[in-house]
Image (cartoon, rainbow, N blue to C red):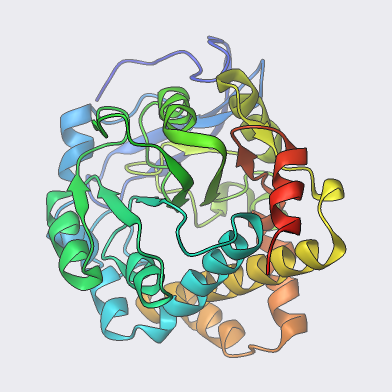
Length: 325
């Protein structure tokens, strides 16, 4: 275990205990705290870097690691369970960065489902980055595109920049979010967008369940963000927020539907992976795939309320969205 650390967002050293949680993989009990100054929720103290890296082995990708609610390899065999999520992300890209020649980097690409969907949709300039060597090899094989092994902060892209950086369920895992977001800023071309999903610590689901929120997996989920803390991170590194009010009504509708599809897909595939009571509940709700149910799921988990970031201004995003078609 590492010693206690100051807040990654504001440097504050006064933290209030949010909860303690037993790690499934290590059997150790972890403290999850909230920064008194900025409200960031994070694990403190946490596993060492070497201990943390060791979590992401073959067992993790096969549903036997610290987060047993997800079995990535099994889901690749049932591709439909994650395809809805991938298509939702692509729908956002299509309205915010039109054209098939956009340069896409998928960070934390796992087993390659999104990259495979990107390639099949006709995008020809995509690549991936995966922290786990096991995952990188699996992702490259499944997706048929280049996938680097390593972490974003230390990865060398030799001056290459991207129009879209996507990080699905990644940022809660990173050890230094500020450095991660600075690297995102550096790698985005002017007008480039940063898409991601992560748990919303201020979402209704998290607020109602409190210390029983299933997203609390302190061995590997090190940070728990809100729209407010992410907005502050993005401002600190020089990224702007895409203001929905500057986008056209049709673009807003597409993004909202995409967020609903993504939230519903994630509920469904966690339900398929988790064989316990949580999985049963998720599978039951996920089976109701009508639009109103998807909207309800999206509103409850609150992931769609987290801001999209752009290397430029929201006006740039609106201008590019208007060129669609």
